[in-house]
Image (cartoon, rainbow, N blue to C red; front, side):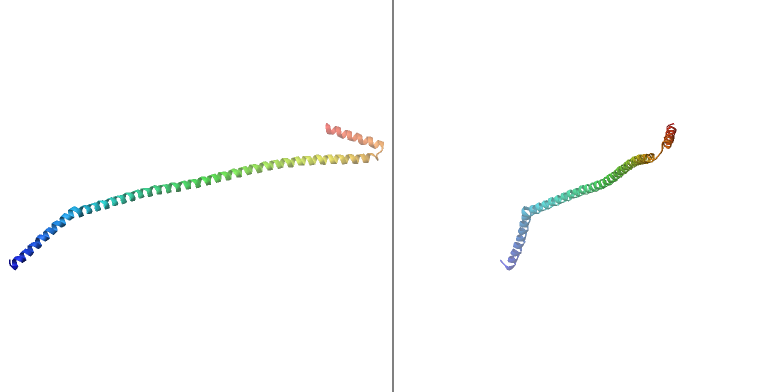
Length: 164
């Protein structure tokens, strides 16, 4: 064998080895690497789908939470409005009750004042009559019989005219 045939044999063996290497790579790719790549792809796709589902669920929860916050804000405004109207009603009732109580007290005070005036007039009249009677008794002690008869007659005439 000559050098040229060794070279041709070496080149042929390199070509055959390259072809066998490529065949081995294709077999290894199909047997081990392709299923691993497909499994990894399926796993990543499942992770992506799970992440999207969690994102959609979080968005739905956010929407629900925003609706609940809006409802709570509306409830708070309604409570404030109700408290304001209750406070206004209570204030008006307290003022009306106080006004009625004040008017009642004023009427009672006016009645008491009138009763006090009447009682004072009665006491004054009684005191004046007692003093007049005392003065008349003292004065009658110094009167003679004729003057006494004249005064008694005038008193009787005056009393009869007052009753008539």
